[in-house]
Image 1 (tube, rainbow, N blue to C red):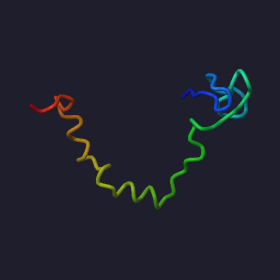
Image 2: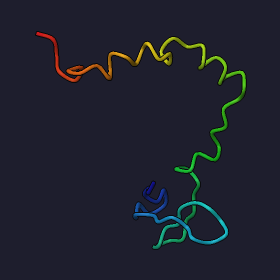
Image 3: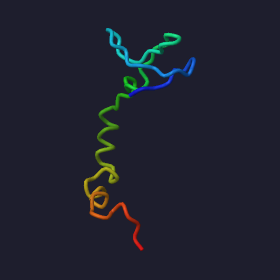
Length: 73
């Protein structure tokens, strides 16, 4: 993923060095935002999501039914 610099707004590129993340070619600002490194999900939260009916396979069946992308008349 690519993102824009929070400091100067320029397009950032992926770092190829030892440090993972994006680096701004203009001002040198670095970030890890798009890598999701600070978004660890706890076991309890993951278990709660697994029990959430929105994420059960049955909830997705209609999405993959032929013609599901067309509105009903």
